[in-house]
Amino acid sequence: MALKSVITAIDTRHPITNALFIRGCAETFAWTGDLDFLRRSLPRMRRAARWALAEFDVRHEKHVVVRWVGHDGRTGLEVKPDGTKRLLPGLGVGNNYWDLLPFGGHDSLATIYLTDALARLADLEAAVARHPEWMMPAGTAPAPGGGVTAAAFSPDELQSLVAAIKADFQSRFWDPAKGRFVGWIDATGKAHDYGFTFVNLEAIAYGMASPDQAKEILAWLDGKREIDGDTSRGADIYHWRFAPRATTKRNVETYCWVWSGPESIPWGGQVQDGGAVLGFSYHDLLARLATHGPDDAWRRLQAIIDWYAEVKGEWGYRKYYAPEKGRGTLQGGGPPGGLGIDEEFMESVLVPQVMLYGFLGFEPTAEGCRITPQLPSTWPELTVTAIRIHDSQVDVTARRDGSVTVRRRAAGTRPLPIEASGTAATLPPEAGAEVTLPGR
Image (cartoon, rainbow, N blue to C red; front, side, top):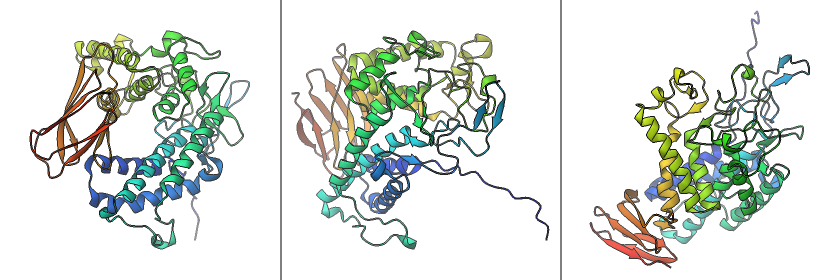
């Protein structure tokens, strides 16, 4: 028998998938109120959480530590002093959406996502405890095949862990000299910082940053302070108008080994090196809403609206960014580019969601919904229509005085509990039913 070749496979797992599964299930239940779905999903959510906590040593380290081969945060490129380069196959494997960048090791982005997932799971476990009539699985039986158990979590235990992770995050990943969060810390202890705007804005949007850290981050993005060594500073950070650059410092040396010639693409010609993705403007808007309030978020949204009006005036993205226009290069449908807007960039749909989740402050819950409006000073009111929540379809109007009116469009099968402005009400199931909760 002749052995012709040995072919090895790279470990392409992403450490964020367990967190995203938990978040997706929690959101699906919150929006639908589907108890059958929750009965099927809850044991899997618990196993996914326990596996992630154990695999990434989260209880001990208080953050996600990825030790998989090729995923320890080291670059797959070795650039020597004379400019020559050596590829390091198997190193720098991608770990998330930004798959050319070697996140991993002590991973800030994976930590953000898992923390949010654990907080959602804590809320869900608390809701299950409040409602024994839901008859959810207790989860005390061994997992199939003797794997990770599906035992229920204590909500208090999860909430304490979430608080500890946030405290660690604000210290471990914060660079006080630059006033922003780094992307990751590799297995050698080296922190990697290319001005990752998406890391910093998601940290604020998901409540991982302290109030002072959030202010410092936005001061950097707004050009009120500049960081030595950055390629993009001041107004140039929003060069693409619809979003800040994904990174503000040129990167030609820290990638997965398969991205072997990053220097051949000009600054801003790749989404992960000075380019931008429209969808993540959503986190920018939420971060501003949380830090500086609705007027600042509205100013940023107006800039996006003005840009979009110009794009529509020239018959869409592909014509607006045609090569001869010199406005930037679109990625999508195969070719790499600096701007992620259309084609496979379905996350662009996130941006208008700021009207629902941000300014209206609409949040589905296990029992019904919670509404916490934040209206800009120039808006007398905001109405979002045809919101599908549980078995209801409702129109919601929030006013400057803090009052909220919810009106049912069609008949449902059960009442809808609503919280708003520190008060509670129940929307009857009849078509046309309406309740108004007074402002503070």
